[in-house]
Amino acid sequence: MASSPENSQANSLPEDGQCSANTPPSTFQDLGIEASLCEACSSLGFQTPTPIQAQAIPPALEGRDLIALAETGSRKTVAYLLPIMQHLFNHPQGLHSLILAPTRKLALQIAKVIEALGASKPFQCAVLIGGVHHISQAMAIGKKPHIIVETPGRLLDHLENTQGFRFSLSLLKYLVFDEADRLLDTGFGPELDQILKLLPPRRTFIYAAKTSDRVDALQRARLSNPLRISVASGALRTLTVATLLQSYVFIPHQHKDLYLVHILGQYVGRTGIIFTRMIREAQRLCFMLQNLGFSAAVLHGKLSQTSREKASLLVTTDHAACRLDVDLVDFVLKYDIPYDSETYIRQVRRTARARKSGRAFSFLTQYDVELWMRIENALGERVEDYAVVREEVMRQSLRVSDAQRVAAEKMRDLVPGHEARQGSQHEGGRIRRGADMDWLRAEMRNHVPYDG
Image 1 (cartoon, rainbow, N blue to C red):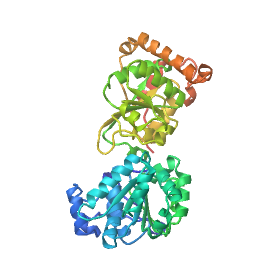
Image 2: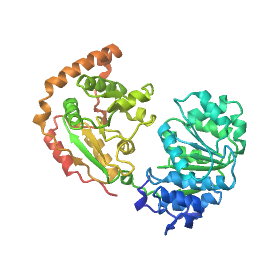
Image 3: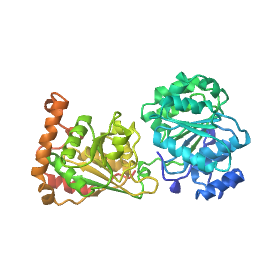
Image 4: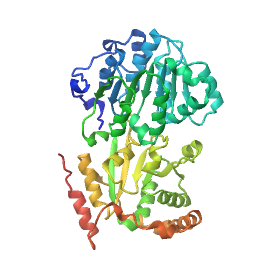
């Protein structure tokens, strides 16, 4: 698991191909970066290398393959771009490097960093992503840009359908998997396997926030004696940041919609993501919120980028959200508690990244107590109870009830037999029959997370 770069150290295990830097160099020049790139870093406000930069840049300059674990926000993009661009400046050629990113947004961000770092040199970078006409991208490939940044699906499309592209990559020097764990989590595994089969031998950098069996499998695919670098501690708790304010709201299950509307009313004009377990529940909530005047949309693959950007509230499942390119939001609200702590972390990281503040709310009912205690144990910290005045919530009962009825009618039209299948959302945990809500609330407030 990844930690914040400020508090991280790498373990030195040379026999496993790991490295560490107990005293990170104080400048990029100390790492072996040439003057023009050091000046570019300085102009961008990058004065001192972060831990991942200090550990990854020297072996990359030596020509090593790397597997680097570093949290989002640790400036890992600069860690792999500086060695690539230094090699490119000294050995200029078209189609020198290929960088794979899980989303269009990240691909565009990487391209902006490339442009800034290479402002003093005449070179070209092309971004090949979905939503752009294939022919115009094929023309860009024909100009042989020095660096290409792509999403996997679009890369595979061009490898298979753009004449001469595969042959043009025969001299490729560098391949980068940025956010490799996310690439694999979002279902790009088959595309990545196919891409690796089509590309020639080259230097490969794999960057991820956390390791997994799938990341380990990826590193075994045509990497040459890779060096593993980690600035990660083993604790899940380090994946939440100081700028993230987490709260749970302990409520009766039958009043979840009322509390949802009440809290959203406090965040009018803010952007947020609402997570549910089931996509049909996400659709029902969206219908209800739209009827109440909220700017809401269900997040799925067919929702256009324009519609996504227009909606202040996106309602979705974790599975759907992790496959899609979504901007950071002001808050996330877990209408249903996730089944495990990793899903919880993945959801709350949709807000409060890159040193920005954010809120995360979790709706906790009498059926979710055991699940929640396991999540708190994994986090190693107790999340605060969010104070809500019940009387204020219940004042909206009639208005919300009308919206629920409209949503139910729309769901019947959309999904025949919806009411028969709707069932219970109580599978998250167990509760003793007749358990008292006040007693459970007291138990939650007194819960001390296991810190082992």
